[in-house]
Amino acid sequence: MTLPVAVLVSGRGSNLQAILDACASGALDARVVYVASNHAGVPALDRAASAGVPHGAFTVADFGSRAAAQAAMAEAVMRTDPRLVVHAGFDHILGPEYFVRLGGTPVINVHPALLPLFGGRGMYGVRVHESVLAAGATESGATVHRVHPDTIDLGEVVVQRRVPVLSGDTPEMLGARVLEQEHIAIVEAIRRFVLATTPLR
Image (cartoon, rainbow, N blue to C red; front, side, top):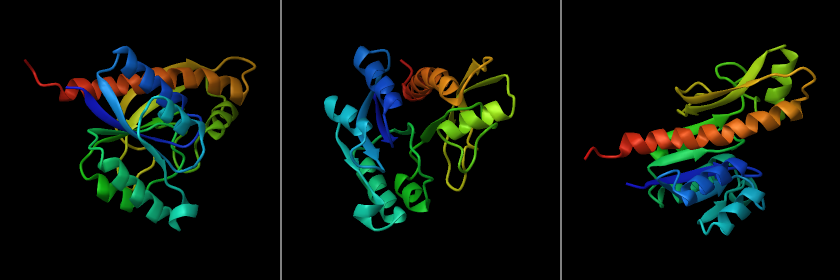
């Protein structure tokens, strides 16, 4: 059974593109049924449009509060009946209004470090790579993990991929290599959910 997947995005959407490409090539027996963003006009929504995927932006400016925007986003997502929700570069912490509406639908997130290291509130984007370098770590990587209400980067690890920290690395250089592994990790994580939901013949 082809797995219906909804994807939450905030920016460029390169992880979304990795998912779309894997679905289109047949490498992943899944289908992106909806893309939601907390920002309007971002490249990720253009990627969804180019792929013919229904999509929408749910901004605080439009809905009056983050809670209202997240509730509306969750309702839009669930109308497409996904079996998995993927946070692919989503930059807001999600509140109870979101999770209540998702019910028991599993949620996963991709994070640009080897959790549980360098996770938690405020740790996203280039801040993560700056922290890795400041700590003198010899490796970093990408983690895909389960997402649960009232936690940040603490869900069970689904996939991890490691990246060495090289002499002379800048946060941008390290981040570029980690991002390459995010693309691989997120597709592999979705594949594991596909296999888990495929009935035995």
